[in-house]
Figure 1 (cartoon, rainbow, N blue to C red):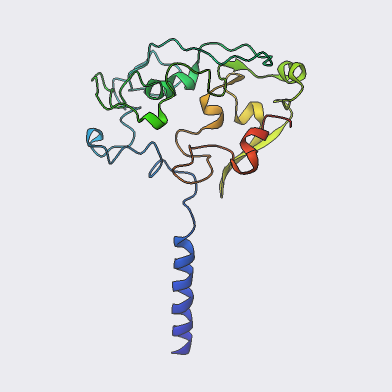
Figure 2 (figure 1 turned 45 degrees about the vertical axis):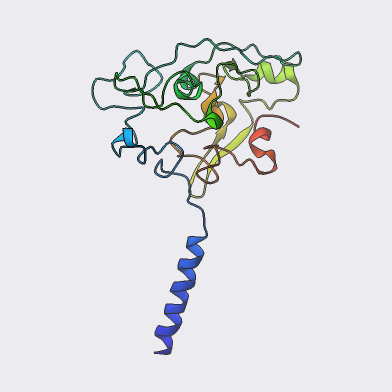
Length: 218
């Protein structure tokens, strides 16, 4: 009886401990991109972005794409101290901005024009001057010219948390086509991220500016 009582107490303490541990990365369920609670989703998570049939094959950077794309032209980040040359967002960035520039409704997918616009908090707009630059080539030459960036071909970084991590060079785990894009810092599927559901789906911990120092040599 004493043994059973001891085991019961241990189990209760273990459950309480687990209840205080935040969910680890690895699933889109419960993340910022889980739309199952929205009436227009029909209880489906993936439908706003992907479809198994009749997808938009003109989008080369996403499989089975289903969301309406933005046609906006963006005002780009600029700085007199910036050595890189920015271009209009490409690849994954354009897919992110199809909701996050505020010109296309979140529920515009499957050929239907929606009316649910992204929240003001998450709306970047079409003026990207106040956001981290994207759409530029980040290579060894840029790191050398800048003097305060790590060489992306040599610097190692780990993304994700818990048992869901990936380690490699900046070029291999953060860049896309050799460029800095939105998905360099954010994982839209919450696979290799850190923090809670409200932490912005970032790949590297923001504590101590680790996400910044992954690339910036300060």
